[in-house]
Length: 171
Image (cartoon, rainbow, N blue to C red; front, side, top):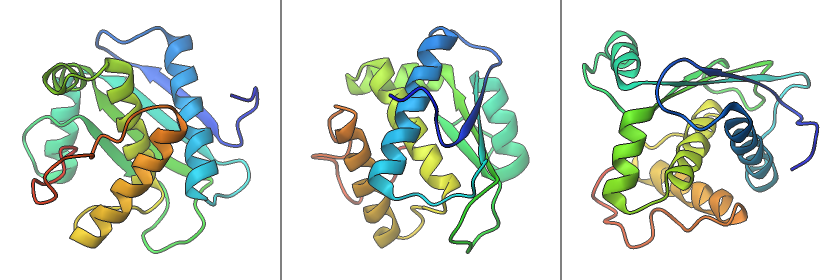
């Protein structure tokens, strides 16, 4: 990890039982660096990213308000760049993560909390850069990129051996 990221990151621990701020800052910085290196993400100089660590109740309210889905989910992304743009920023957007859901999923999948959280930050960040998984081909590209980024961070491919028709566990 370098001391100076090319993207300014604003972290907010709103609620939930999260690791300490220094650990979260290091995790997000590692994700940003690996995602830029592996994903070739292009952004305007001086770009900013916001990551909110919160609880299921807040994520459920946001999901209901903005996606008309009255249920919690593990991660939501709110892009700051209009769709179709190839350069992103200066406001990249917000990633919002639900602690109880992340913890329950990690336990159910036999993953470390930090590895699962790292995966979800990567997933959320890629959404901010226009990646999606609505169509099968998009999902395959996004999952392959996530796996490469996570591999650079020393985390096993979360999609290895998964059912390709099983849907995306992240929404």
